Image 1 (cartoon, one colour):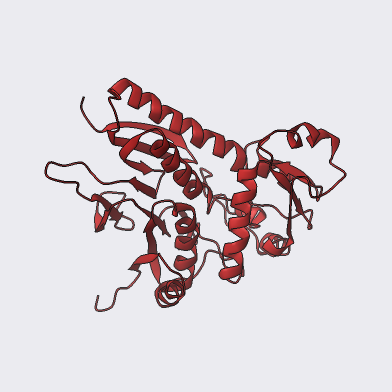
Image 2: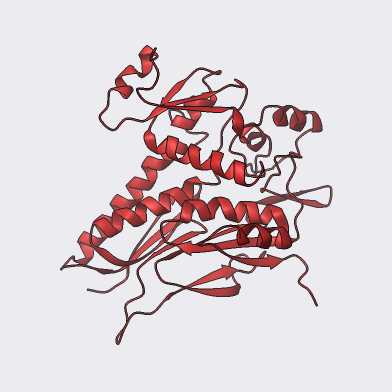
Length: 328
C-alpha cells in the first residue's frame, strides 16, 4: 500500500491533518484511514468538552453557572489544572479566566471591532485564575441533582466552581495541545509506528519517517510571519517530538492604522507588546499541551524574557522570530 495515508478535518477552528507513515502488522490503507477517522472523532470529543462557545460543553456550562458548582469530565479537570499551573509559573501572564476578554476581542468576526476601554476594564475586573475552585469527585457532599447521574459514571471527574460568578474560562491556549497528545497516545496504542499529527500549528510526531537504510527525522517548517503560509523561516527535524507555534500574525485586524493581534495581555486587556512575531516550542512528544501554553507565554515575554524563562524549565527548546532581528 502507498504511505502516507492522510486525512484532513476542521476542528478547533482550524484545518487539521493526520498522516500515518507506518503501522505495525498488516493494516491496509482502508483500515488506516478508519483509524485516522477515529482519531478525528477523538478531537471532536475534546472540542465538545473544552469549547467556550459550544452549548453543553463543560466550559460553556461552567461559564454560565453563575458561580454554582459544575460537574465536569476528568479530562476537563486535567486541562484546567494545567491552566492554573501555567498561570502560576508565568505570574499570571497565562490566564485561562480570560474568557470575557476573548469575547470582546472577536477576531473571528467578519468585521472585528475595537472594544471600548470601559468594556475592557470591566472584563479585567473578572479575571483571576486563582478564583477557580476544583474538587475531585467524592470529596464533597451535596451533589446538585442535575449532575448526579454524571457523578455516578465509572470514569468520574470532579467539580469546578468560579468564585467570581462573572468570570469566564477559555482553554484555547491548551486545548489543541492536549488533543494532539491524546491522539498521539491513541495512534501509538493502536499500532501506528510513524505519523504526523498537525492540529493547526500544534505538530506532534510519532516515531520517525520510514526510509531505506534507517529512519529519517520529520522535517517541520516554521512559517515566515505574514507570508500567508508561502514561505518557511526555519526547518525543524523532529523524531518523536512536538513543535507548537504561537504568532501575532495568525489572527489580527487593523483599526485606525494599527494592527491588533489575538495574543491578549491579561494585565492590560489589549494585545501584548512584544518584540517577537512568533515563538515555537519544541519538546518530546506527549508535551504538546505544555508547549502550547509555553509558546504563548514566551511570545508575551519577548525574546530576552522567553530565553530566561525557558532556562528554568527542563525539556523545552525555543525558536523565536523577532520583529526587528539584530542587524536588519
